[in-house]
Image (cartoon, rainbow, N blue to C red; front, side, top):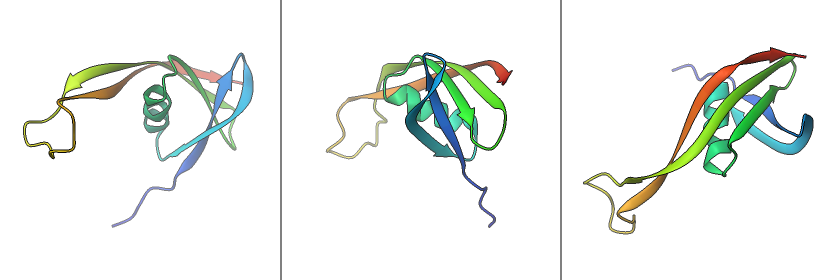
Length: 89
């Protein structure tokens, strides 16, 4: 099985690079990680390119699966993102 190469995405805050970096093969996966940490207006600059991926994110509380482990609570947080587009810098 070939694994996809992971890319690094820098979170932009107030239009500037922050020190927060998410690694994933796809920008959506990095955006889900950012949304899970509570970010709502997500702009991720892909390192090595001139692309900025723009997402809208949120966290919603959903019920856990029926066959959940005993240590998992009945409700869990789930990240939801929607892609708004790609900007070029």
